[in-house]
Image 1 (cartoon, rainbow over the protein chains, first blue to last red):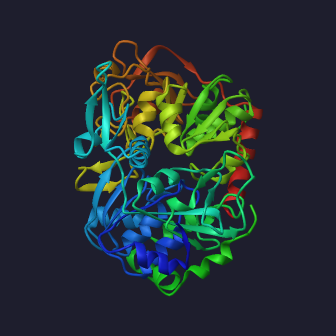
Image 2 (image 1 turned 30 degrees about the vertical axis):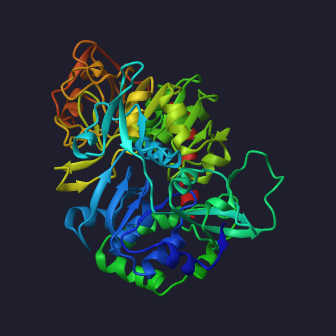
Image 3 (image 1 turned 120 degrees about the vertical axis):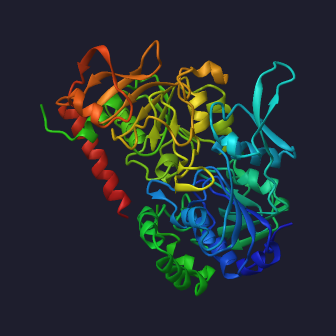
Length: 282
Length: 255
């Protein structure tokens, strides 16, 4: 049964040091406000998973929250590389970072396996690709019917999934629209789930019979954080701040500049700061 | 002949390789520009698919990321990411996968993972994303890349996605029965795999480009087909549509 609570309360209840965390959203609906809250609460030694670590994990890695990263594409989409992640991998700053690297297909299948209660995902992948040489979690199985050799990876089952969505109703049923990514799978694969939303409405019934809905009993906490995906976007509310994604390249370029930015905007900020990004029009 | 830049010739040549009936899995950057130029010129009904789940998208400006709202707003339908990779890509529904490359070899194997050793990299690149399975599951692959010696290398530091095999042994050796890279479109020329050796061979030189220029920017011994043609230069219309698209994109991304 979902409780509607402030974000700091939800994060304090669900996220402990050493937890495994999936903060998903495929370019769209990335839960940035929640990540800032995790950073502010000083969580350490986290295992974080995301198909595209993006700016959200670049920030968490740069602030030293992360011990291990499971991922499939570590770029600043359309801009370049993730500089804080690179600094951690290449120079162990601010701490060594263990990485487990997959392809998108593997990660998507692994979340789906987690949601389906399976121990592993099976798919046609990695043929002729070298990741399976360096990642011991990529193995193969033989189809018992055809003899075809298929790739297998462990299911992803995070302790906590955190996502952002358009809206919830008063019971805590959650609606996701637009590019829906792997959020439904991540939530259903996780032991606990936090959803930040743009708004709470009276009722989601009768809008369309095939809406992507997470029923309230699959979610632990709903937190109202308007603008909470910025600089990612919320379809129907505000567009992706592509200019900020470009600016981030310079902000994250050196350690001091990054720390100064995080100090001003995250450590001395709060979830309410995101409201200025909400409702700029699409 | 109108004035044009080598990068424009590359995008135009890549767009011409696509047809109206193609179902194309589109990478960000140069592939996205080429695919949308095709859609806005000779292939209005081409189906463009981005891995964020958008099927049949018709963006007015080029997306900065693979999941910009523009892609979803203009798509025929948008599906979840696991469905995209399972039903549509692995299910064999894609005719052309369009990839860019940080590093590639003469067999069309691609590296977007690391420069140097994997465990102690000199440069940590973004990684494969969708590429390892795009490379094996699409009916065929086009690659587009700026022709530079540091990109067109003799030996890759890491094989992110399969072309025709690290030694040109062919894809069957890896249990793959799709065609793999059939075209490499650069800002200097078009290359296609030789029927015997499977190594990329120059089949068309862009206007004004010499064989020497291609050799200078290629890290392997370049082979030329028996008859090398000249790529027709961009038409006034192709250039106008491309430049308009890029101007709209630049204005939109400036916020």
